[in-house]
Image (cartoon, rainbow, N blue to C red; front, side):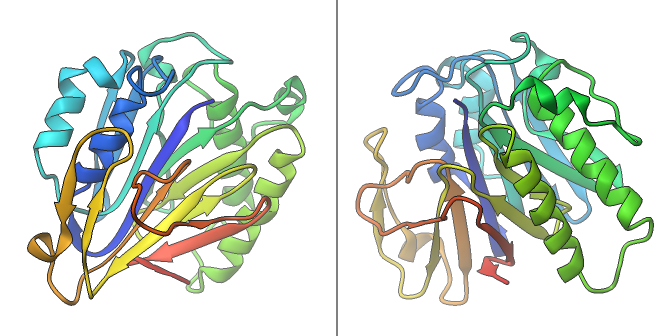
Length: 255
């Protein structure tokens, strides 16, 4: 299985601390050696990095860990391949355009062959993973149901949730999805989140010897939510999503 990492914040925030823990699981403390990727939103734009090599040894991953790229929404993924070759085109997160926005998606799990019986309305996969095929199907269904972006995002979120439930019937489907403002996290088996806000304290990573004092890194008005397949810190209380539950975050808060 792969692992996911997401962030939603009300101010431009870097994800160096959390990513430092995640990248250790890509061939260090975990078996996810088959590539990794990360996307940072800047307004409607997205700054993306992909590497088919293990993140624990990746010079690009070390750049991300050491260089504080500020963003409101981040989606990251480390891969343990089950369907599809180990190559650049199969590394998450995947992206497509809808409503003049860049949609970013990453998936943890494996879906059975019945997935490929679902017809693709518009988008086509570049690689040969079940994950990207599911994304193309999901976004194509959304495009058909909502040709124009609605003013109220609630029916969009409900529609995506219903389609995620449909995909969950085909296997394990844990997912992160964003269009630059909303960060949607759907749980099939395991996904956890934590919201950090004042009063801030210290936190220590589970996968490496790094501790950060968020008082020194934040302002009293900051709100930052981090989502991960498994909790990244050993001294904080994370909230686990239930199977079939989808949480949507805007500016660090669940909506």
